[in-house]
Length: 99
Image 1 (tube, rainbow, N blue to C red):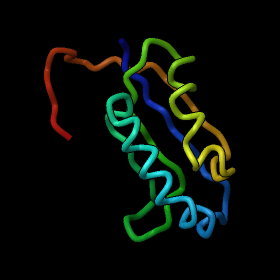
Image 2: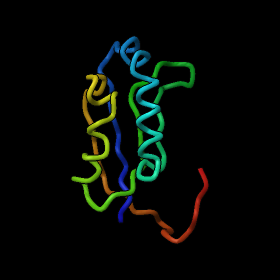
Image 3: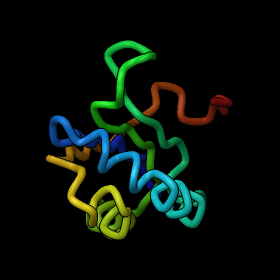
Image 4: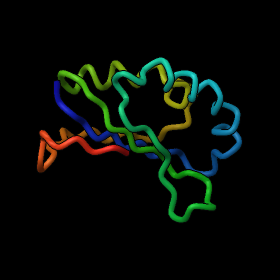
């Protein structure tokens, strides 16, 4: 298994849609918590509406990463503008880091 950083960019001015989908998005994240190790939103400042999201996913390859998020209500509901996926290599792979 490998670690991947997944960066989602939301479409602009979609706060209402985000709010509408948020509960089902959190339910989805709970179902995939064994693979999506660290999910979270990205904001310019803490009080702003999210601009997108950043996840750390454990998967065998990029195809599996895409298979994991394809059913996310934020993705299927049309909130996301784009996604960027990068393989991530920790500098100290054996070091456990709580988040």
